[in-house]
Image 1 (cartoon, helix red, strand yellow):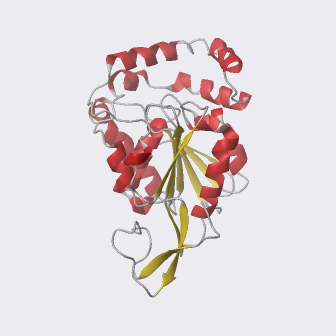
Image 2: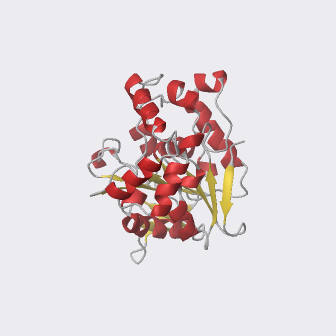
Image 3: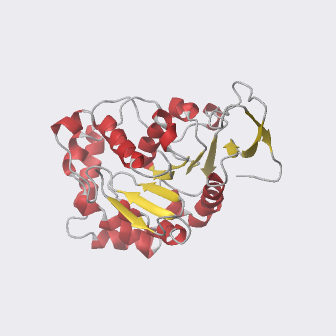
Length: 294
């Protein structure tokens, strides 16, 4: 089982935080500080990161499936489906879990999801880049911490959390497992049947084009002036979008999100096919409620 860290009241609604490549459960300090007074916050270490198990021959031979199955097992162990908040590599795995096992996920918050290219082996240039990057932390990463203080607007807590993860990355995964398999990002987004908020930099190279997202349950927001780590580059913008979405995701089950509207289920009528209403109970119709917005 993957390692988990926990904050907040265990009886409160649960958020599960899923980090990106070379990070860990320690990579969310500002979000945890913000959410732990209201929610039961869990953060996972993906395989080969933090305190979770290392990679072996069998798991590396099917790395994308291993990561997805690991995450499914973690979520299956929870008493209720959480809202999953995920970044980059963790975002892709959470997206795939949301498609394969929507019963496990209450809603998704995705931050600049890693985009698979259809390759089934690591790209040499990417491995070399990641190896050099991690080598910079061999001495504890003091120079990298100082560089980020000069070059970014990240909080000290975020810089320390980001830097502190690097020494516990399984280099074998970097060398042999950093491939993402099927190029399924857009098709997966459009197959989701859980409410999803997807945030990405406007000028990044991984998010779908808005014209490609036809799923009414998915709200894609492209943000100016940020890089890959939206929550660190623009925390107020991030939380201004994410916090209300999470709040509404935990509202009573007779309400559901569809796209950028909150729709309210009313008993006694049928939902029209193709209305994007797969997450609501049969025998109910979804009608827009003008006074509520996600």
